[in-house]
Image 1 (spheres, one colour):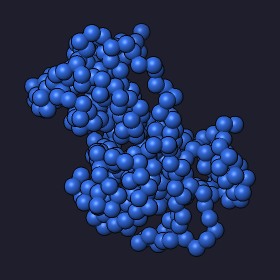
Image 2: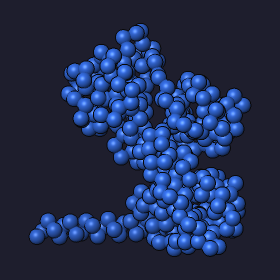
Image 3: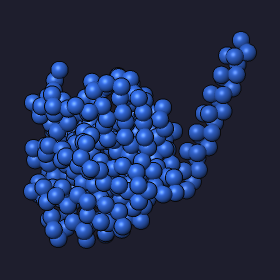
Image 4: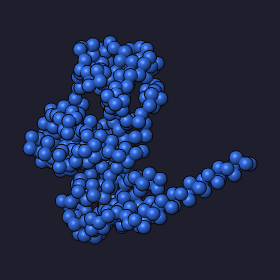
Length: 345
């Protein structure tokens, strides 16, 4: 149901009980994987591909009891793993001779490219070294592929450390074709995996959840932005909207517990004409999401869950961060006392 002709053709000719998965969180357990694949069928074996020192590579081989289980798993390709923001890659197995890593374990020899979404200007790049930075990425891709608009690196939701993957947004869609062909390029001693970026919900259609543009209020200087990645920062927003005009303030709604963006915010420009340019960016694929932009009647007042930055400065002072940490401790303490009271009753 709702399968593309390409997916149906793949499943019709698939005769293996195994699939190859990668892009998983390094701290993912066998139970996590079984939960992710719980609707696919009975699993016979899960084999993690590890580094020489025993650390996870985020890759594994999953063997099902029946071919049908493997076929169901293939349909989960590029779905988000559990509550993380990682796009898990599920690839078909092959009985051809396999490549082997330094530890002699099996790696999938073939990696098919994702079908390119229309107008796509962003690629997903993974298997990156923790020492990589934007300068290295630009030096690797810009001369061969074309002008890069933005580079973003994603942090692990739990550890807050670099998760080993990110996104590159080019100025022209043709540049993504060249970048994808560079998959396997060595960056700081690691083979980068590159593919067209897909949003977890829209799956390549930037019009699915875009509401009609609101009527612009007279003298409007503010826009609403939504559909944002939880890893986005004020600096990312400023970089995306820098060509629209001078930005006076960026406000992102933040989660109190994780201190990550809830997915929406507001931008105030110095001139009202800047908002007209900003709304033209609506539907742009950015950091793995198709963003929403609309006129805002007035600048939303910042609440305790908001984070703002004026003039490109730091988003919060040490005092603000300390106060937020203290508030979180109080909430947890109150919750614990409430639970103990309920238990006593």
